[in-house]
Every structure is written in structure tokens, then in C-alpha cells.
Length: 328
Image 1: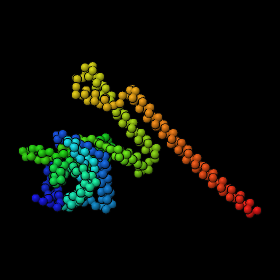
Image 2: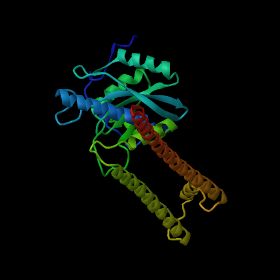
Image 3: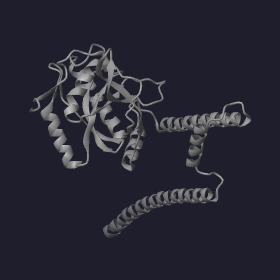
Image 4: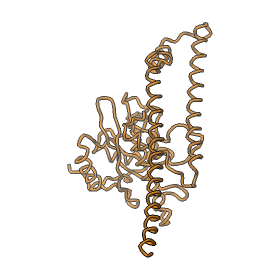
């Protein structure tokens, strides 16, 4: 049976089963790359700005930012799903359908550049999962039989420390005696490569639009580092206090937790080891060498400019004297 020309997403009434459950039980490990978050955020920002300029509010409720939709692509190796990139989808706000021709064309173009990447699921924006999301999810099952759903919350929450991104899977649960497909939240980790780290660092150091000075940016950067170190110190202190209490017998012995703490400690470099001192001194000397080279380069550049100005002035003075002598 041939697939329809469009993916219908609004032909069925909303279902309460679309509400996300607590956590996934599939055992899959999800790795999310920062490029996906940047793409979704950029997509939302562009659509929101275009809607504000055109005054078109048909795609969203009054007072609510417009929702955007797209596909996430990547690879799956065994039980590990790694999401590398994403692209936008075209949604008809009137009929509520996704353009299949556009989706297939995008898939074909990405296959030529990234032959190992497959459509792993889709993304959208919003504060929470909506009932209509399940219809879109079901419509994409012919592309991937078990798609993932990435949801980005564009609302700014200064008190929130975690990323406003959630990943959902779909599982078949029996509700009120009938099997229904519902969203379940899955855990994920951020995975980066060298190019992404450089790009994210560049974006983080961009000058703010309010005209903040370099000193303000440096202060904000140092404040962030100080907060991170302070949080790390407080968490290490909590673990230390717990281990001391366990050693004294005030807390019950938990072998599983002790193994996790031991594994965590092994990841940290030994600060008093000879290798650490050698590596630290080598990096310290390299940093000093780079600083001195930068100073010498700056000094040489200044000297070159001074010599050029002196030569220009001397040539003009010589030409002036030579002109008067010839005239006399």
C-alpha cells in the first residue's frame, strides 16, 4: 500500500494518552550534540521574529510563541542513540499536515552528505507535551518505527540550571483496559566533538546585544567559573561527609554507592602525583612561552611601525632639503 502524499497529523482527536510518563524502560542510551539545540533554538527564534514582523498569529495561540517542527538525524549503534543534527519540517497550519515531499527531499540531500545518518525522530518547541504531538509522532513511524521526540522549552527560566530540553520515547501501555501509545521521558547526555566545542565557546563569548563591555563579559565568565567550582566543592563536601558518617557507623553501609564514589574518584587526577606535577609544569611553561612570544610579537610590530614612520619622515625631510638646494 503506497504512502499518502502528506503525513496527516490532525485527522484524529487529541488523546489523553499523549501525556508523558515518568521515565523510559527501553534501556537505550541517548547522546545529544549541541548543534541540535542550536538548530532548534535558531529555528524558533527565526519563526518568532517573522511572526512578530508580519503580525501573523495563526500558527499559535494568542500570547503564545509559535511552535516549530523538524526532524533529528544521527546514528544508532546497538543500544546507543547519538543525535548529531536536525533539519526543519514544513507544517501546514490550516490542514495540520507535514509535507512528505519536502521531508523526502531533505532526507535525500542529507544522505548525500551524511550517508550514515538516519532520521531518528522529530523535534518541537513548547513547555510540555501536547495531545496533538502523538499524531505527529504516529505519522512519522513510517520513516522510523520507533522515533524519538525532542522537546525544547523556549521560555526563559533564570532559576533553572538544567537544559530546557527533554527527550521522549513512545511505549505501548494498557490504560483503562485498552493499549495506548504514550510518551515516556528518557535520560540523555551531551556529547561534543572538537568542532562543536570551538563553536559553542565562540557563541558563548559573543558580545551581548546590549553593548556590554569586555570587562563585563570577563566578569560574567569568571562568575560562571566561580559558581561551577563552588558547586563542585559543595557536592564533594556532601560526599565526604556521607563517607565519614558511613565510616563511623552513623549511616548504613551501601556497597553500590561506594562503588560509584570509587569510580568517580578514579576519574579525577591525583593532585599530588609526580605525573600531575610534570604535566602541570609543562603546561604552565608552555603558557608562559606563548605569553612571551605574544609580547615579543607585539613589541616587534610596534618597532616596525616606528621605523616605518621614521623612514617616511626622513625621506620627506631629505626631499625638502634637496629641493631647496637645487633651487638655489
